[in-house]
Image (tube, rainbow, N blue to C red; front, side, top):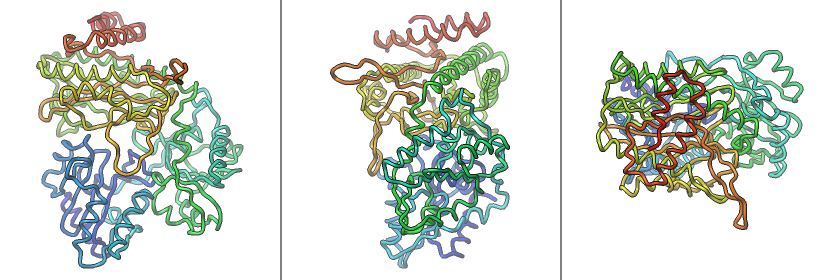
Length: 600
């Protein structure tokens, strides 16, 4: 079926259930950022393949909201679909809630807003219900209309899980549960319901293969003061793991039994739940006389502060990744023009280099290898239709990462393949200076990523330039490559928002970029570790330790556009790259690296 035919069938189901507006988010039952094939309902209904967006269907129109990373991509993928693109955050573009309010006011009857309640957060579900109620309307959260029309929908995954030994995790499950229960006691909660897949994996020191690029297990957890209930497919765990569960007082239940468990909470019991993570269907299953403490899941902060074992391992993972990426840069820059290489072939070759490293598990996200104008699409994904052949001209942006037993990586390098314009050099150098400025920041404890973002934006804003994505995000340990709460951003989100301080042990990316539609895109990304600096009468100062060691392509750097300090920072970084990576390269690769890490 075409997208238009799918929309027509969806509207038939809407009519059958008396639904006026149907909302299809990008989500699974756990509010994960990246979802497995079974949950790609929004992509199925729109043809838009980006990782973020919400589709809304009425009886006569269809809309897609997405963020600045995907404006160019969405516009292209929605062509001829009849779906109208809504550029979230842009002036004059209403949010979904604001649009819903305006839309239902046009109706002459009480509206009915529908969505699969398992894929909508508590916060969003309450908002939709409130909006419908203002016009004496209702919500319908029990119907998965996309599932009713998706004949060849993939099955839920059934891959086996695997354990993380203490030499990787650095802390036992029993110890983590003890810390969580301490936080529960502080809030007066008898139970904590956790639905975030990476949070459960971290607690259990277990990983899985249920979500592409995210080594996680489809599961739910209910933690009490004396036991933990795990809701997951029992076949994923071998007998050794099940024995360990028993020792840690972890009871294993069917994945599908979670909703019934919510109904069994007793009157007066107090449960802690995260309104941004738990889905609305589960929330509505909890009896009204149960006390619900709606707050951030404590595991989010616990997990973000990497322990000493994790930090030591993460450094090892980045050394491996630096070796692989440097070998790839050498290969690409020496082979270009001598053999046929496409975007997809380049990304496959980079994965080959990573696979040569010990304990490599797989890519940490879908690779972005974007040549020339394709790089202006922030999260471009090459396909058989778009796979461009690389020539000895222009630049290719490679944003890739890997999962290793020692941790996860995320790196972007824009690589020169031939002649570049003066504008491209200017933009490349601006991006480089932005990345260096942020990485060199010193700041007092209590500072947020929002406070520090200016260090990265200033080189852009001085030239009246900008980029429509966050400057950086937290990174998980063999989990989600995008991990809250750490992030760099400048614009205050809509509504109330608690902005957490950066703390020692957090890992965060530093990835400014510039994107010129139909011309070029440039991004440079390193990972940073927050560490302690000097402590004095003013308090505890913090700084960043750079984790990523891969050369910056000097072929696009204009030293005349850099300050003496910026040149010094680049030279110091390249000295580290050369010292760390050279011992692991062949003779020709070492000579090449020596040239590409020379002082400027």
